[in-house]
Length: 323
Image (cartoon, rainbow, N blue to C red; front, side):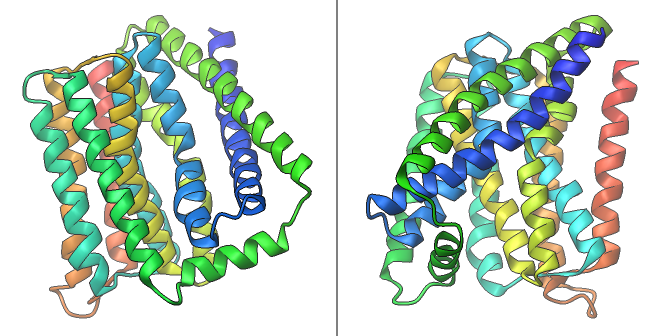
């Protein structure tokens, strides 16, 4: 039992560290080959922060562990909103801009409905997966096109400053990229092996392990970036990180895993996990519109505490269903 636990802990730590090295190396390499800072920020860094979920779910699909693949994706979405946004708002209220209410949140809600619709037949088929990947590609293309139309962009400026501050020779950038990619794969395999072994030892489904231990572990980059954003006073970035990550998980992570190997889906995923994920997404509308007056346009500390309470209650329910 000790070995699987150590494998999960080491796998998680190595996963987060290697994802960071991968992003640094990929961003610096892309800069050397002339990619605009805006695209580096949107594509390289955007993909990089969700690389743990992507690689873990892909490897889980290859090894025929659909529970971890789906649990990791949907569990990360629940963790991102309930735990990460809850904790972030508890530390400092998060502003919810009108653009988020008009564009990002409705889009995430529609993608959540699409995900729920695909689960009614009890599986994510390859056709379902290809639909998810196609929608993701269209959204990425549209977002990049919109970003490139702007003459000035805050993300592009910030990315340019980051690249200048952390400039490195091409050889070092390529080395970090290679090391990060190799260790991402190795640490993901280690994490999946440990998680499956623990599930077998306790006689629980790999779905529960994916929804809890694996989901929290792969969401650590989002937690770190959100807390860092709050420390800098950039509260809107914390919310943007979470919404972007949830879109990526719902479309790309599940899509790639399903394209590798069709995923069998238990009925409880739709009636429990996707339902919680959808309700949490809808709660952001309520917090953002601020119908109660003083909290208008932001997620305040009371609402952050509410999100944390939901996360603790959901996790407790999962644990109680096991024992």
